[in-house]
Image (cartoon, rainbow over all chains, first blue to last red):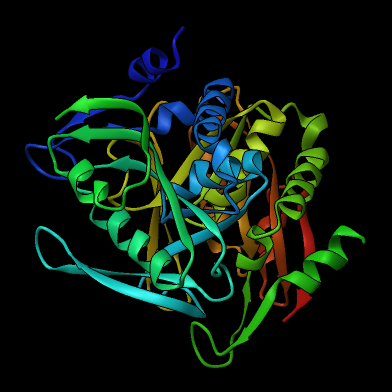
Length: 178
Length: 178
């Protein structure tokens, strides 16, 4: 079966979570299938293999699930981005606007350096707010942004628009119209 | 270099985080070394290979980092345990006491079944509260608990005592006296 097709059959859609009107994409059934996980990781890594990625950045917490495996496949280090206050030593932090209020993400000290080629990974692209903030963090440190790799992209929420100004490839394995 | 020795040299100890008097063990430098990550995953998987593990349960959020790779190595599914309210559909939930207050963890629907052989994974064993609660969740569903696998164990905080009543192997790759 095509990877995209298998993902679409496996991802569970749950109405009104976490709030009314949202059709939540639940990736937990994907994780139950080791061969499908392997295919996802291989495909995301394959798309960026030519870029000589040295670091994969995963966004807390669902970016932690496939991110370390993508890094392994690319022979790269894995770097975590967490919400404010959870990392003991921070290299840089950035705040960004959410639909209601704002959020701050932080990147660990001594993890990314100028000269690194960085792939940013999260499970899902929606508005792109967190991914864009993470990309700015990476650039702030002086490293080179090489691309964004997502499992899922929700179209129509502005995510692609928020990220395309970075001028790097944006890859997802399956897209949903919202 | 021996795995334990390399881990000890790589894990960063940070005083007074997240609160005064705690010597925090920061695993983020481990994630930067793909070969070391691979060795950790292989060793944790090796210790449980004879048990025919069908599911690896990872505890949010640092149990998400190596858990899916351990599951891959064992040809098992990966199942997430999250704090209350984050999973859209829940099979079972359990509350447990913390030093101050209490917490609730939940396991996703349709992820673990009677007949599953379950390995519980987290990055660090301290008091064992969350791991013990997760083990009870697994047993509540009727699955068989096969063991606990941690990257780090902090001795002297009662973690081993909290888990030994389950009568299954408790494995860690490196221990620290507190």
